[in-house]
Image 1 (cartoon, rainbow, N blue to C red):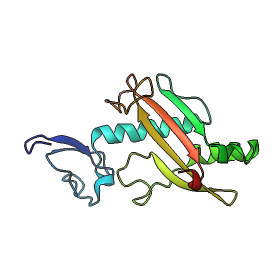
Image 2: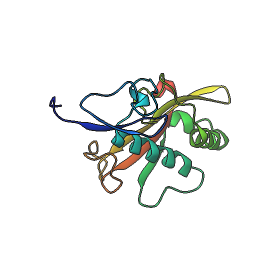
Image 3: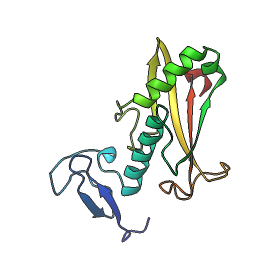
Length: 155
């Protein structure tokens, strides 16, 4: 990025928008201090909200206008339909994002335990044809989300 290029960041504590050339570590509005996940760019904050809606959509319906696929690995499927249902429910309700599992604040990965089995979920953002990464990941018209639920041994 060029030195004079500024991005807009959002304070996670008060939603204040901060225009800066480098990622802030303190909000000038509320004085909250934090790491990069506490001051995401507007794009990252938008992606995080969209990812939350996708996960919640596992219970109700994928949000209108959002293109998405859910992939279950052979290891997840082998544990049977009841386990698959619990995985989908657990992923959809997950909110315990932290510095460890979500360092950039996009809420696109986590590690969960379902019936004593450790699982991962990962949301990847592809172009419309799912051939390449999306050139505009926050743009629902240009992005297809792929949510994969897998066992650690399948990573």
